[in-house]
Amino acid sequence: MEGQAQLAQGVDMDDLLTLHRHGLFLRQEALAAGYEDSDLRTALRERVLVRVRHGAYVGADTWQDGDDLWRFRLRGRAVQLRHGERVMLSHTSAAAEHGVSLWRPDLERVHVVRLDGLSGGQSKDVVYHEGPGLADHAQPLGAGLGLEPVRSCLGAAALHGIEAGVVAIDSLFHLGLGDPEQVAAAYRERARTPHSRPLQIVARLAREGAQSPGESRTRYAFFRQHLPAPVLQYEVRDHHGRLVGTTDFAWPQYRLLGEFDGRIKYGRLLRPGQDVSEVVYAEKVREDALREATGFGMIRYTWADLSAPDRLAARTRRMLATYAAQRGDHFPG
Image (tube, rainbow, N blue to C red; front, top):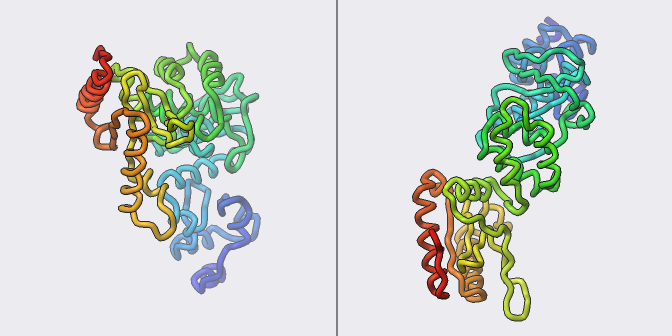
């Protein structure tokens, strides 16, 4: 009861919350430090702590200040603390820790590869994969070990599909965590494993240049709709050779530039004290400069376009045909 009274009066548990990065600790660590289960129950009731998973806790502020992906990462770290070097994070769990962008990931269960030679399996919140030959690709990650980035992203693609795989691999490249040759080599290693069929397309589509999930999904929509693959991050220069700007997409042979307009993109361009309308106006000035320097048209895509890929494709084909015709060229459609 003494511990309960102290906690009720606001006594913190800093000695536990500083044991590991980001405040995670295990029940057995609390008991070893002299706390009792009743203290943990009181801390949960008083909202000093949050139970991340069975036997693992974190400070309430750390939990509440994060989004769903952050909480998923905390659960992964709790699994690492529980199992030590007998497992390493893998698939979506490792990709999230590497900071890779994920599209609609399943955040219900943590994925790990066993390094102790035991069989794979599942529990309520953890999927244990067998990992013959993967131990050499383990590296420090999170609160323990994790699979290196390229194989983590391919694992996430195997779980979540081609579009999610393209988003993850594009992000991997943008972060400088891998390159197309490494993706191709990692794919060949698992080409005959279960769930590897989507990875063939992911590996084939792997290209450096996309800088956001919106750009990646747009690029995947072009592929699905049988549109010609654009040049990514196309540099436009004036007649003096000076850089005017860079566009997300370009089809130089058809005289068309393309941009993905996401709200996050505009937010990223905001300077302190600047209004969004100022950024939108600056983008309009930038577009005019790009069009003037090239004589090309400009097509813009939004998140709403990605929910109607047929219309996206039809509009793109019309624009490609229109601007190609201005130079007397023909777009085959």
